[in-house]
Image 1: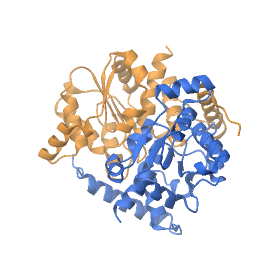
Image 2: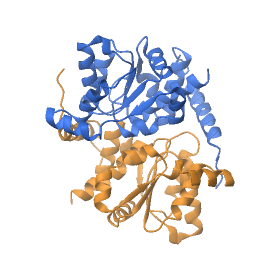
Image 3: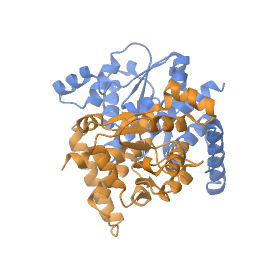
Image 4: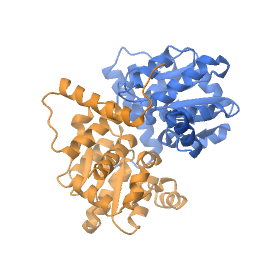
Length: 213
Length: 213
């Protein structure tokens, strides 16, 4: 069997193929700016799903606030270990960022049980107790996103950037609509689609863009 | 904000909504058997993408061989840490299964460099040196799937079940077509779509089905 075995070559060819498909099948599509183009193409690269051309929503300051948080060596909080696993740790370390997923933390389990809330919600509560600039990355749990919005509604000084792309059929679309209607700087997905893989891809696209500058 | 905060209720409602959409929008669809139905619905649950109704391919003995491997306490080898992260560890431990992702193993990096192959391929070589029944779960790396097919072509006694759903634009569809044409017991995705999230969802569906028996 013959196949390409150079990862850089595979990735470069993948993006060239995506560009070709966009030119042929979506000739009228225009990206708002080069970073949004990189983010959207990486979401397509991760899913092979061209719906991503249309469903990401960028708040006016979303990309810039996420970039700034990463440059400042923020703490990143994910709602799943899958999202955490998918984000490039080498790049994070170079920027001095740390990344956490508290959902399986015993302290979070106890907090969730005591309060009758999901572990995803309790994980957000714990994240809000951590110092320094924060960045939330949600690919799975609508309740995490709802919780963060509740907290920030009551305390605007806690405002922080969010990648909000929970996938699913119960609460996911609603949680993302609430994020899009909020003042939080964000990148969000419209409708049901999303996922930990897309959440990680969005952060990686921004990390690689920072690296290339 | 009002939203459901009971994870079991969210999951049950999600599957009820998926069932309702299938009945309304795909009234002629018939599942081959109840386990395939569970696997396909969980892939849809994980992606909110109804293409999964049509793109999974099950070899005649695919589901049964994967079930048997899990019941025997096999070793599972994934191509990404994301796929590993997404699989239910509590259920694996109950069955005596262990799970590994060798792609970031220093031994694998050295092997890949020495041989001029991808780390994903070297990770398969290392997995083949591990004892006992094996199950491969690929959501990302066509080269891993190609490598496994090469090895088993030369040594039919090494045949083992495979979940083969690498996503992407370079080699992914070809690697899955090669798996579907092979004698390896498999669940594979046709075309470009796939991913670590779907790979994990397929294994989880089979784990939960085993649990319910």
